[in-house]
Length: 198
Image (cartoon, rainbow, N blue to C red):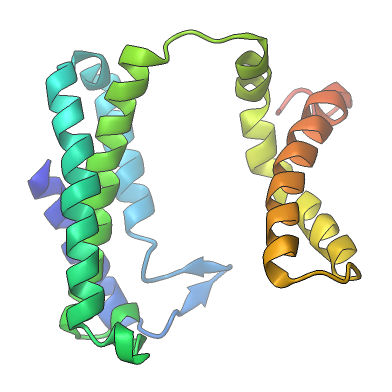
């Protein structure tokens, strides 16, 4: 797994060095893009090999804790030593900078470790669902597909609210989650045409 994290980090770093400064294509950050197909490929391989059911619980816990503790420590070192505390975050975003390489290594390791650990944790301790969890599970893909316009509508409505940005953020977050699940569950999934794909 560390080898695959290294592959993801190296490919992401090279792409980020080639396309620095948050270059986007179709609203996708080119620097981060290699992580998506590589993680998707890992998921396909894990599913085909039935690896996720075979992970021993202790191994999953070890990866989860390593991802959280070692990943957290690495992030602190990168922020403290890389100049972010003085306000200069540009070397982290790409280009041939050690900070960018460190961030790509941190993201790759932490993503894989926490993902593997969380899968084992949920497999072992949260393998049943009540009615609310069933509703959320049934509608999760629809929320993934349709959440953007719902969030835009909520944030536009909150624009006129005379409140601090923190309060608006909290309201948009909670309202967006609630509205997205309710709209998908009670409207979109019952709409002809949408029902087939959601």
